[in-house]
Image 1 (spheres, rainbow over the protein chains, first blue to last red):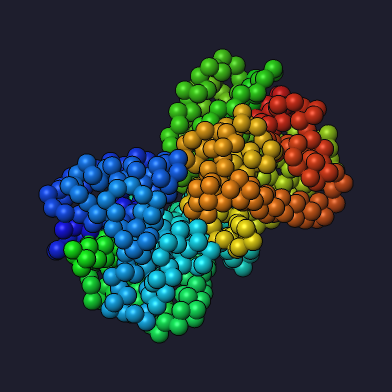
Image 2: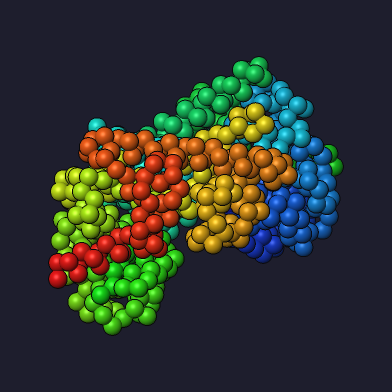
Length: 306
Length: 306
C-alpha cells in the first residue's frame, strides 16, 4: 500500500520505506499519471487538494481529473474525503481532505494537540480535540476559521504579506509583482538550505544566496548594489516578521479555542516553527515522512481500517 | 519618427497617426526585435522600463538587451534618460525613464499639474512643477517618494492589496496565490470591457464576466456556487476600495507637496480615475495616445529637440 497526496504544486508519495516529493504544477497540466506510473503495482490510498488548481473550471472538474489519473495507474484506489471516509469514485467530499487525513491519524496518538503543517504554499492548523467538528469543512470555512492560512515556506509572494519595508531608515513601498518568494527570504535568513528550494524561483534562476539577494532587491525595484546586501536581508527579515506573526497568532487562537495543551509541527517549516512556537517537531520522530504527512497519514488510516 | 515605450509587459509604439500596443512579456524572453520589425524604416525615439524584468540579471543587463534589440531594427535610435537627455547607447540613465518623458512633454502645456498614469501594472504620479527635481530619480526613489505605485488596472494580484474580505458577514482571509487579477475586479465592476482585458488571465482563461467571477471566487478557495455572484463581486469591491484609497492618498500627497492645482489622468485607468479624483482625462483631448503616453511623449520631445 502507498499513500498519495496530490497537492496543487507538489505530488507526494509515501511507501513503507520512503518519501518521494515531485514538483507537479497541476495548473500547468503536469502529467500526474506519468509521475505515478513508477509506483504502480500495489494498493493506493489518496488525498488531494490540487482540485483548486486554476486549470480546472471548478473543484468537481479537478476532482474528476485527479481521480481519473489515479485510476489509470492503480487498481481500486481509495480516496479519503472530508467526511473522514474512503470513497472509490469522484465525489465532492474529496476536495481538500489532506489535512483531515493527517488529523485522523494523529488524533489517536495526540488527542490533546494542535498540529501545524507548514508546507511550500499553505499552512494548516488543526485542533485534534475538535476532529469531529472539523469534518466536512471546506477550504473556504477553514480560511474563515483560521485553520488554513495561505502562507508557506517556499512559494508565497513577498508582496502578499508586506506593503512596505524600511530601507536605510526610509519607508519603501514594495512592488506587487512576483519578484521574490518566501523561499528567497528563508534562504538568506538561513532557515532553509539551497537544496530545500524545491520550487522554481520567481525568475526561474538559481537557488543560491546571491540569486535570492537579487530577487529580494527587485521587490523594491532595485539591483542589489542599490540597497546593498543589508537592504536585501532587511526585506527578508520584514517578510519573516509578518509571516511568523500571522502563523503565531493563528496558532494561539486555535490552541485557545480547542483547549489543546501541546503543539505538533510538521511540513518543511517544522523545525523552524517548533523552535519559534515551542512545539514538538514531528520530524524528530517520523523523519522525512513529516514533510509529507497527509500522504503518510492516509496510508496509515487505510491500513488501520482495512 | 516613431515613439517606442518598452515596458516589462507591454510594448507601445506611436507614430503620426496611431498607437499600437503589443503584449510583450520580456521576462519570458518575448522577441522584442521581431515585434518592432514592421515599424522599421524611419527614426525612433525610445523610453523603457522593461529593464527590471527578472529575466535580466541586473538593470544594466536589461538596458543592454533592449538597446541591442532596438538597434538591430532602427538606424541611430535615440534613448531618453532619467537625466532628461537623449543617448545613443546603453547607459544606466536609461533605466525607467518613461515617466520622465511624459513629464517632459506635459510640463510646457500644464506647468501646474500633477499627472497620474494608471497602466496595466503600475501607476505613476508625477508633479510637473517639480520636473527638474524629479530628474535622476530611480524607481527605488520613486517608490519611496510615492511617485511610483505598484498597482494597475489589469495585472495586480488581488492578494497584494487585500488580506481578507467579508463574505456573508464573515471575515475571510484570502489566498495569496495569483488566482485573480485587478482586471477581473475591474471587469465585474464594469470599469473595463472584455476587450480591455489585454493581459493573460491568471488561469489563462477567458476575459468574460463569468470567467472573472470564477477567478474571484478562487481567491477565497471557493467555486462561484459556494459564495454566489454576490460574494465574488464583494471580493472585487473590496479590492477596488483598497486600490482607490492607495492611489487617492498618494495623489493627495503629491498634489500637496508640489502645490499643483490640477490633476491630469492618462493610461488605461484614465477615465475611471478622472471621475473618482476630479481630474482631467487626457484621453478626451489625445484619444488613444493617452494609453501610451510615454511613447507619444518621447516622440514629441525628440521632434521638439531635433
